[in-house]
Image 1 (cartoon, helix red, strand yellow):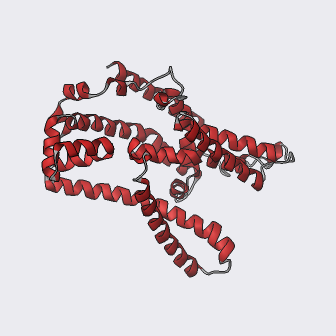
Image 2 (cartoon, helix red, strand yellow):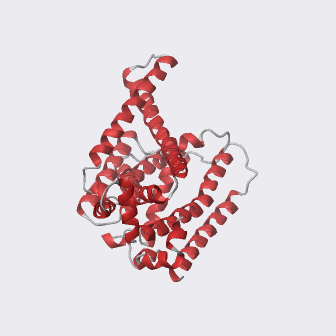
Image 3 (cartoon, rainbow, N blue to C red):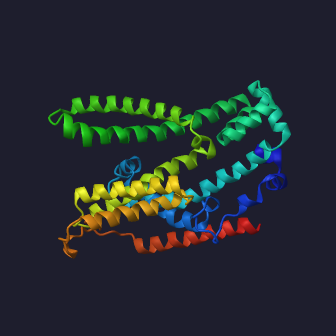
Length: 343
């Protein structure tokens, strides 16, 4: 629909040329203008997604539902190869929808649908770019399709939110409630407690979201950027804690906790006092946690302290070759981005 309304040439003409600058090798994300340069995206993003897919309970609980390590790796490979075409599809969709939104006709159409004025619609889009696609849907699509799309959006939201709420409830019950409050409860008791904590976290998230909408940060970036930026304050230290726990025997609980606090504290300092790209926070938080934990831990264990990471049984899949293909796929993505730039 957006392509038919805007046309290919008009869509690209309405797009800011700066937004087609994908592979920015000249900046390193040390200033506000270089947030999405190549190096912070590649290196900071690597640590972000290692933590997200390797340590985040909302993801790991899905991976643990399969039977073998090879199956976990296969599920992650589906995401590795499928994420790029999906992202390319919805970014191209955003280009065409943005081209339609930039026309005066859209403001009049959206204003008529919303019972408002074109100026009010323009001001709302300026404050909150996330309204662009919903307004386009309401303005141009038939009612039956609108209903199906919003049902699909709500279903996707629910499938993501229930994983997060379930994860927070499970951590609260297992690591806090069962450990410090009720040690001898039966399964029925802990099930009831998990339901209560799920309700608590749901109310907490709604209240926090409503409070956050009143802050300036809520209108500076889109929702997906805000989610990843807030997560980047924590993802590096979380990944470091898992690495210390799996790869070493010298790290101690207190030193690891001190390292996590140092990593999060450093990231908050970078957030408040510098313009460094939030993507780098994943790396800086990881490095600070490792260094502080190493400095505070006694030197005891030697090489024999390392925990083996390989599965107990042999694998029939040549995983080093698969990983090499993933590396080549990354180069393919870089090539496609380059073609978009020059095209």
